[in-house]
Length: 239
Ligand SMILES: [Zn+2]
Ligand SMILES: [Zn+2]
Image (tube, rainbow, N blue to C red; front, side, top):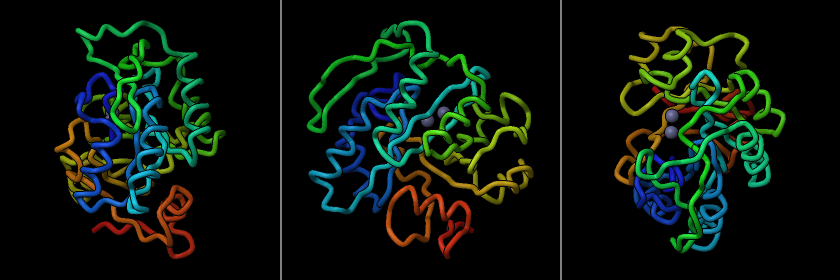
């Protein structure tokens, strides 16, 4: 889900409110994935640690826009990895945000105090290809997921017309507007991948619109990786 750091997300999407809303919805694991940035991951981790009563696990992530304008969801095992990814992205991202055109990019802390505004053009594409971004995510120990493959814009299928074999995705993600059955009919090539579904929440009320049920020993990215590979009894529970 997106925090108030993403220019297109609601300013009320603070890490605190995302976590509280997810908790209300009975969600146990959330991924924080702002467009081309990760400054609000640390406050989300801190909020979950301080006030989450062990009920909610935050996975550090980022939604990266490749040179082909394809959104890739990178999920990471810890804060350092996602911040390394952020450095890779910032080194390849040009332009300055115009808040009145694209939206505010607000950096907050776990108590919703505004710490500053990100000045990068986070809505832009970086100068790295799909394959390069996936390679970098993997080299940092992360998981690369093709974001919202059913959407008519910014998905690998909308941009290229297909999912290239050279792109070593660990899974594909469906948006909340399509069922797994319908997605399998419309995009038969997703049969090659594990499929997850998520809300991609830009507003608090989107949280829970789509979720993925996993059978895991405990919450965490290591376990999710096992489930994506259907290893050691871990798996995705979807119809
Ligand atoms: Zn996206
Ligand atoms: Zn998104």
